Image (tube, rainbow, N blue to C red; front, side):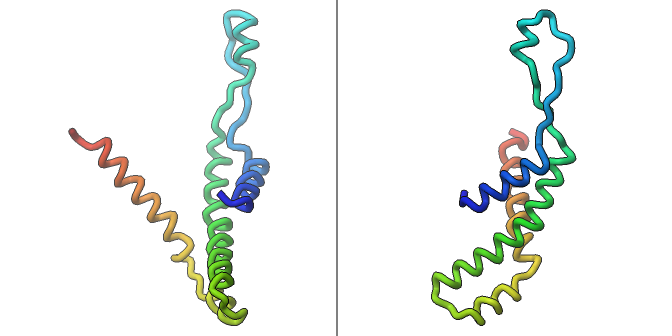
Length: 115
């Protein structure tokens, strides 16, 4: 994971926490209460928002920066690099997400299918 990706994801997590702390239900003793002082509960709304923001905004920036970096490493000129960035399509950005989801579904069906 690159440092920029780490910072991006840390920023998303701080802006939209994925878990919320909540006090446990009534426990039998105070020692159990001290051990389980705070349980974390998944915040589904924030988690979905983070995934959408990461895929739309983060995916777009990552695709553009990848194209720019590869062009620079190949020694391409500024005009060529800008032309390549202008030609980046939405399908280029979303292709990775859709392909990953389909691959995960195929893998899941293969391991959980009828024996």
